[in-house]
Length: 145
Image (tube, rainbow, N blue to C red; front, side, top):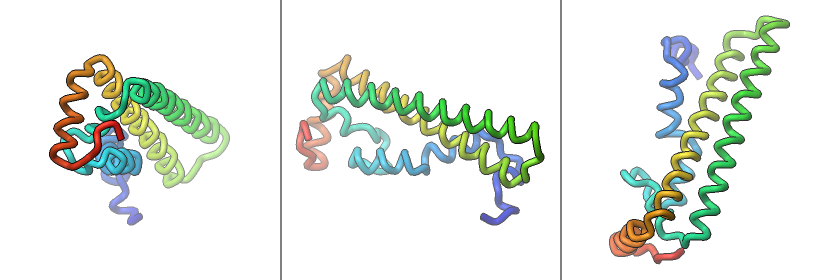
């Protein structure tokens, strides 16, 4: 990466990095691909096609992944703190660690969003059925796939 274009050099905050990652990061791209609706307003539409048991399992797994992301971010930042107390890491190393921690937090937010959507559809099956039906009609996606 060109050092002049590096987010830390432009005064970009971690929140700005996280916002960028939330729309362009690999997790978001993967979920859009699985959802079958890349660049759609409702990227989780395919979640509505799952049965209640799978939807509940998806929600539980997504929450677990969110917790793992937060724990990993905390661990990275703790290790950075310990390293800074002993030596002076290079600014590039500090930037890389903090950016990775920010991406992990962004991923946690995405996982929580997915879990929340699964819970919503589970609590409102009529909405899930309507969305699944609309999706099947517009994109030829089999309901319950």
